Length: 76
Image 1: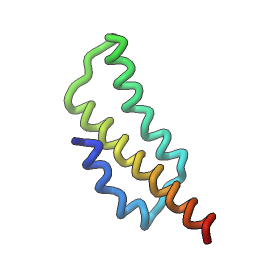
Image 2 (image 1 turned 60 degrees about the horizontal axis):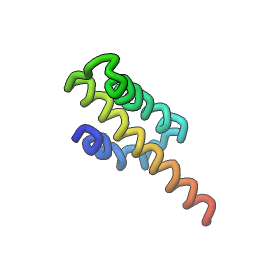
Image 3 (image 1 turned 90 degrees about the vertical axis):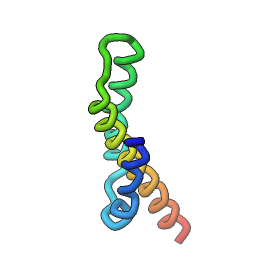
Image 4 (image 1 turned 45 degrees about the vertical axis):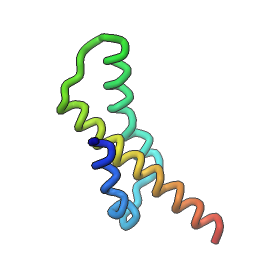
């Protein structure tokens, strides 16, 4: 659910695009949270899942906007 809420930032990202690398880096917290849970090193909390999900959703939006902008510029 939090990832989907992060997607709501897409319109703002088209107005103020961020670099592709920022989108990739915003995926790291969720990957680390999931990996450490998978390895049973710790248990996550709902709040941590919400925060990492929001960051991931915004990061995916940044990646989408970067790719769309790249395609529009290369096809023009």
